[in-house]
Image (cartoon, rainbow, N blue to C red; front, side, top):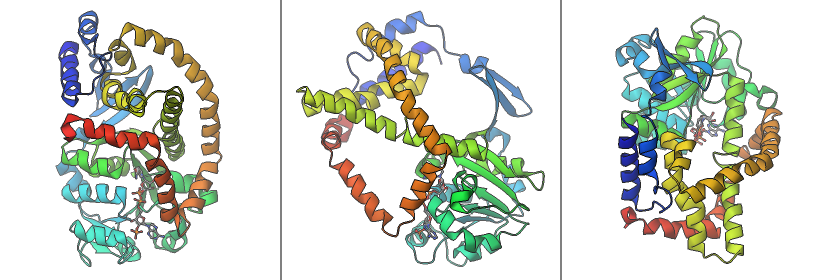
Length: 398
Ligand SMILES: NC(=O)c1ccc[n+]([C@@H]2O[C@H](COP(=O)([O-])OP(=O)(O)OC[C@H]3O[C@@H](n4cnc5c(N)ncnc54)[C@H](OP(=O)(O)O)[C@@H]3O)[C@@H](O)[C@H]2O)c1
């Protein structure tokens, strides 16, 4: 697709949402004339043995795609297996239903009569057929997919570990439990394959993208390779659960980057930055709607989609010369001020302090109520109350 066509499509999407700032798309047409057709991804692609080696900004990395594992190959690969998926929360639901739709023999193991048990029945899993109490499911499985919450993986480990015999493969979707085993006490047995596939998104997205015929991106890793087939198993499973493509990592890198990212730009950092900007606008007499629009609405509805579609330089290019000049002047300052915070955060992740905090909080019997209290504080903040009203004004929400 040419840059001009892509620009027009983006503009159409944004216009349909009726929320494009005047500044944001004012120079799309001129930038389309100036810039060459966008084909960097094609240039960087080198296909070998059905696997793609991609030049990511100067570093070569191997990426595996769904096309490497057509459905027939997956069915053949897992024809003698039973995948015991333990836990039916966000990931259990997404991965479990995708596996089932792919025709793979998957069974669910959850606490009998807990909320996950009921949710599984609602999704068509049948007690005694493909829905079992946790221990029973593990005994039946050749693969044990541990998708309990991270705190629950630690709490239940002592009772589950003896069931993990050497003929099974143990699977995680987060490096949390084994990497921080000094805190979690989860020490995988050394005589079986231990693998990881970590979808880069919520389990709901794992499911919705699969249903749309698309696929989430995931990372995969090997902890123990007893059979010499651990990597192949991880790759097959990554596609079977609905990934579109996967890249290789280690358990350590996965957990460190994941805990860091969600505390930083993905959630905590961006939330803190929104609040700081909004507060200063309000303290300087701006109305709530103006403060919200200039902080969140324009970001999420107009500018961030441009970054997502074609990158930061594209977003700069799509803005007015005034906006562009200001952002170019100020981003180094934000970078400089924030870098020490990110360094502190990474260190807190690496030392296990974040893991300890998560275990302490999430294994309290009343953790759901306490979480709800904290979310209520956010819900009731002026900025997010204003957001509710602003979203109602979007024409598509009328
Ligand atoms: N959510 C994400 O966006 C995401 C993304 C990538 C990777 N991951 C990883 O995927 C794994 C699963 O995460 P999740 O978010 O899907 O978990 P979750 O939604 O919190 O699921 C919790 C599951 O654990 C069960 N559980 C909780 N406490 C238990 C206990 N004491 N004994 C037995 N079962 C217990 C729950 O069953 P009951 O209903 O019976 O309580 C439920 O089935 C984690 O390793 C996580 O880090 C998550």
